[in-house]
Image 1: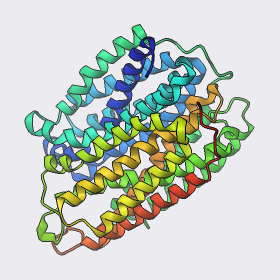
Image 2 (image 1 turned 90 degrees about the vertical axis):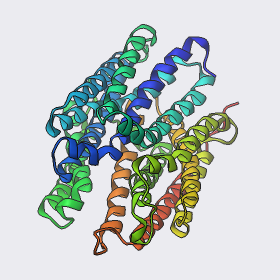
Image 3 (image 1 turned 180 degrees about the vertical axis):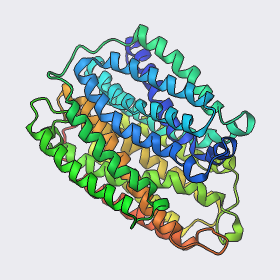
Image 4 (image 1 turned 90 degrees about the horizontal axis):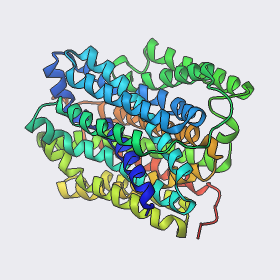
Amino acid sequence: MPRASTRLTFTVLATGAGVFSMLQSLIAPALPTVQHALHTSQSTATWVMTAYLLSASVFTPILGRVGDLVGKKRTLVAVLLAVLAGCLIAALAPDIGVLIVARIVQGVGGALFPLSFGIIRDEFAPGEVSGSISNLSAVIAAGGGVGMVAAGPIVSALDYRWLFWIPVAVVAATVLIALRYVPESPKRAEGKVSWGGAVLLSGWLVALLLPLSQAGQWGWGSARVLGLFAAAVVLFAVWLTAEARSRSPLIDLRVLRLPAVWTTNTAALLFGAGMYAIWSFLPGFVQTPSAAGYGFGASVTASGLLMLPMLVAMFLSGVLSGRLEPRVGAKALLTTGAALGALACGFLTLWHDAPWQIAVVAGLFGLGIGLAFASMANLIVGSVPPEQTGAATGMNANIRTIGGSIGAALTSVLVTGRLQPSGLPYASGYTHGWALLALLCLAAAGAALLVPVRRPAH
């Protein structure tokens, strides 16, 4: 457990990161409600999710690096204020355009993850770092689950705007406590922010993630999708060249080439593909009317409750990871977490005819998420120089998001590629999707096996 002097710091970091993680999934079940309330189309409403994804992907590594350079506390408070402003704008948004802008502002909060990990590394005693990172990772993982579970009851009892009013109150209190009690990290990286590198990084991320998220509507063979993918390849190559030649790169490529870093990032890419696709498609599966030959016709609230075992398991296994990591090592925990994800998706491929089966699979996958989140963060933090913590953990979170976009896009092709006359997907689309996710998680376990063994701390 952290010392008394660091417990309040940990509480601030966990609250901020947990709220941001919750905002990732909180709005997804309420999108039909938002669409109706703001009198917009389904395709326009999906930009509420897409804008958030793109914003978080851009700001997470950039502001992680800014924190390394100018101070993690200062950057943390600025990011919390941005999240507060984004939630306030969203709660008051009169139309869908303003809500989308608010989600872009909220996406700045993605930097809370690398900043929090960096502050823990800088401020906590060496013996507390691994356990605190595991506990924070458990909160981050569980935050997404809280969003899925809480969205239905909040919208039913109050209004979709309360999905943002509640975070406004929580984040406002967190900002005040952070200003007073979170110390400024004394360790700073040398150099300056490479804004050219930031622009190039933003360019290839947007060019990659935008078509992945919109290809279902634009068409995989459309000029927009193919053109953006081509632009992503070109911009990525230019970014690599620019970063390699820069005296003060935004992301030090030498750090990304470290064996423990690139293998962990590969596992993050593959496991992220499975995790985010499960989050995206499992609620839709259980909400499908049974007349389609599968599904249970569950309400948003009921489908959220079926995800409750995942939420509980994510949190418990994440906390447990901090106790196990000194004994068995983060590599073993990452491998086990990815393997549990593969096992859960394999079970789901074969058994999905009763709600209890979905609940069991959700719990099993939650165990895998908790172990994987905590171990990935510990592997990155333990492998990079202190002054590179923010940038390196930011890229790890980003790579996991990229994997999630790829996994969701591939699963969408399988699920929606062939529809029944009613417009609903066939059951085979889902089973093929679950099988693909099982293979992706299995590949993540294989990548985890390549992570160099570190001597466990005693």
